Amino acid sequence: MKEPGTRLPLIVKIAVALTFVNSWVLFEETIVDRHGLWRYMPFYKVGLFCAWDLAALLIIVPGVWYAFRKWRQRSARLTN
Image (cartoon, rainbow, N blue to C red):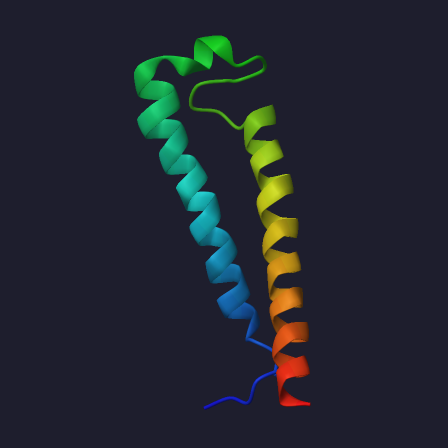
């Protein structure tokens, strides 16, 4: 078992980020596209990469990075 405060492997960080991105894509396909909500979303393009996808990525990636950074700081503090 790893000691608290150690770094998580990069593959774990990528997997977590991809899970959130996949959740966004599923939300787009099942809610936005099927129910026609895209009509009320400016700059949204059905089935294509658009400004909304970019915004989601710009929120998810730094959010995951920040969460792992805080997790590492918190776990390092607990070991000292």
